[in-house]
Image 1 (cartoon, each protein chain N blue to C red):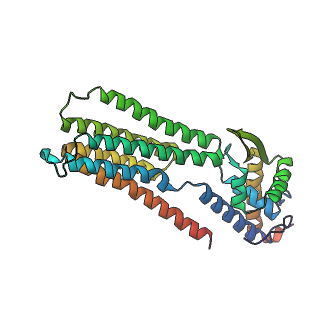
Image 2 (image 1 turned 180 degrees about the vertical axis):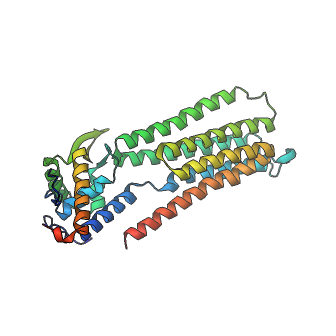
Image 3 (image 1 turned 45 degrees about the horizontal axis):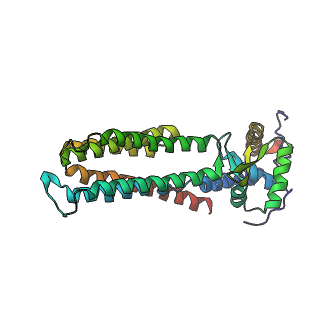
Length: 218
Length: 106
């Protein structure tokens, strides 16, 4: 950026309008968080977590990889906690830059995720040991994914973000497909279509942001 | 603020540096504020330079500068006031009017 003579008015109205547009685009880019930061951690947690589930508890009780039976659920919960911690940190970093209604909204949304997940996990844990592995997996995975789908759709409503809403709707449909496909297949569907969907949406939004950035710097 | 037919360009905003500051701040949602260092980074201005312009905008009632604490770290937050937002909208409207009616330029 060339040094600017401070009190000098812009050359002409057209130039001023260009300056305004440039500055607004530059700022919007600068304060928009990297879309990958909120979606990729969850996407990869799903791919890996449900992927391992599928390998251990496959369709028709098949075991593709003979892992300890406690490992998949433990790994899934650890991955979810890690993704939650990362996205929480990432969100808090955004709110250090911008404060006001936007950051309060973001904080409330983040807290809602945590509280809803904690409450639901507690409720579901009361069924521990009562259900066969296959049904327990269907229940845990189905409930978690239903909640994630609903939260993403609500996020779309809060920020008027069509992509986030569609991701939530997609996740909800994938969840139903998983339940209908039955245990074993459910994990594969959630890993590939659910987790893959989040990674894809994160990537698309990131590429769009980069394209805007390149246009702004022309 | 004057509301004449021939658009007057607001002298407070009608300086490149302050126009850039106000444009950047106008991107934020109403009532949201941005940390001073981040604004400085976006505008690529020195802290001293930005402070001078913010002071002038503050004197005109266009921006609000709040010094606060985040934990133990002092933070300066900057936001466009409603009046500042209106002034910015009037300014851009005046620019467009000038472009459409070049002969009426004052």
